Length: 494
Image 1 (cartoon, helix red, strand yellow):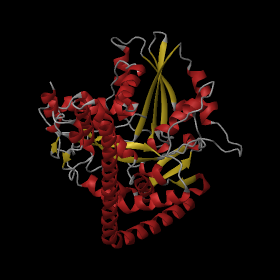
Image 2 (cartoon, one colour):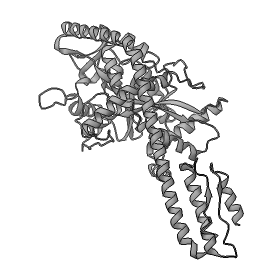
Image 3 (cartoon, helix red, strand yellow):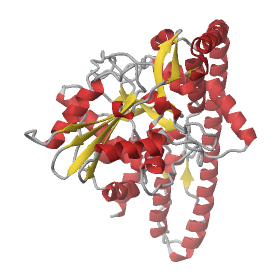
């Protein structure tokens, strides 16, 4: 059986190898001194497992007296090869980073002289707009800034709206629901006597080329929390609620009211649903989840979520500088992308489609991720990649991967609850090769997210988008932030 076993691993070796024959009849001492001949110039980490297997087989073919010495020699040899391989990998990584820095500096040198004059002009214009807003509205209004301004950008084809559907048991009482939300969120005060969540009282509109938050003079909660009855509707109530949700999402949030509304849907079967719709400029999904769990429920829950790992200030400064230097590389990679599929570059219709499926047991997801050494997010995104692959197959298309934008949380752990947008955007390639197995696709997805977690451009993207949105007039920003190069946007948070 040994000849067959020996041939299998040798086929996968980059190096050539000759294994010592079993001890000859004229003596084992002489045979023990015969070295194993091996060309290790091209040996790398991919060979080590095969090399170990061959070592075990070699030991099986030797006498007992030589096994110990051969094993000791083999372990020493493997140790040296591992050290060499790691040195080679470290050197390759270092050279890659050096090339990235050099390329980034060259791109900065070419583009900054052209970009800086425009940025200075936009900054000057934004200061003038801020003064005009103050002169026109006084202290009741302020210019929208940072990532909130970025999410103010909208068009009829793409509205930045967050929708949440919550189903509960019981008989809905619209009066109690209004009173509860009003006291817990809308009229909640901080120690200084100001509204804790002021945006729920403010109008959101564009003026002087920039987005503005303005306090509403007369706030009436009945305009924001209404009730719809589906008691006498025929058919599946769940499907009807989803259709109503799609229709409502397509409608504009009224410009003369704060950009949020809640619809209580009474299905008449001992249950009711809350359809919460609000503008993304109010806050991101993480902020809103915390708002619901910490302020809306009777027994507040403390929400914890992963945040960027704490770093020494010097290391953090170095990482931020490196992130800024290599930012142009990331931008070029996205802009130059062109997925060969019908999902890429299509004109959006503005139609919203809501769908739901039978809940997948979380324990099953946990078992899958534990077995594969992945995360829950890896498993969910792998399922999305599989579904996208099937969609392309139905369209008779083949595409090896789809460029997808993923939000990356930049909230700090234990930070005070504040309604704002605080996340960056990362780019990954979801595997959509039709011949790829489910396990291989999960592995590809995990590798993509592992790389995303250490992507040096994430911090620079966050600060660049926030700064640019703060100073660039909205009509111009709408032409810049077009999502060019992106086929999908996916998230496992609201």
